[in-house]
Image: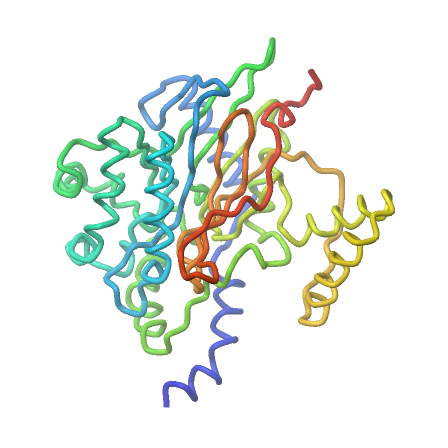
Length: 364
């Protein structure tokens, strides 16, 4: 019966999840992001932190683990191995870890259950805390860390020490006479369905979680294969495009975006560049990939003038166990993926990269 219902409703559930999972509103989003950005700049420590950094500093940004209770509704279960391998790598390399929200799935699970089934991941995160290289941001699914009076007590239980939780972070890096602001927040701000909406929380915990668990449907398909930016990502970009010398990094949508473009959009740009250079082997390779996507029904992107300043870390709960994130290191920003290779072991792959200085609105 379950397999029959999966075939009958699986694709429909995923379509509806993508269509109705978020009701972004441009005015609310822009106002919420501007208010948070201004508050962090004016009063560091109140709602967020400000770090003045150099090209020698190293950051890894991961989001949307949605750690659960290891039942089928636990989207993190398959990705845990890649996540643990990534944390080992970044801790050894002395990265500062910014957890960009929705780390714990507190819409669907009791906190006690999450603590019980995720002890190993909390221990790995604790290694960054011990080095004073961990910053925790809350999202809409773990809003508990921001608004519950027992949040500090429970974080102390988990990590064995005090851990502050913020709504955002601003990294400031100077290039000659120009300052680049890198603004990081979960990205649910201004979202009518997610920004503290009680109905969404009730629906997910009471209706969606049991249905997902029974049908064994995970709507988090590998987001680096998604063809177009979601409406919410587009509105995040529209805010960033109005700022000066400011990049924006969010999570929330589970869809990686690099320099304001999704993976498919970047394929089209690479094809255009390869065609201009008359590099036939690369043209053939890119055309083959595009044929596969067109055959399965992917839409063709429409390109307009854009600023390469919006990034999305993707998530750590893809249905195939992959995780994606954003690295900042040696003056570069990179979109990375950790996935299972043919040997069965986790491996890091750099999907895209560019120099941070290229995010400035002026050319140095």
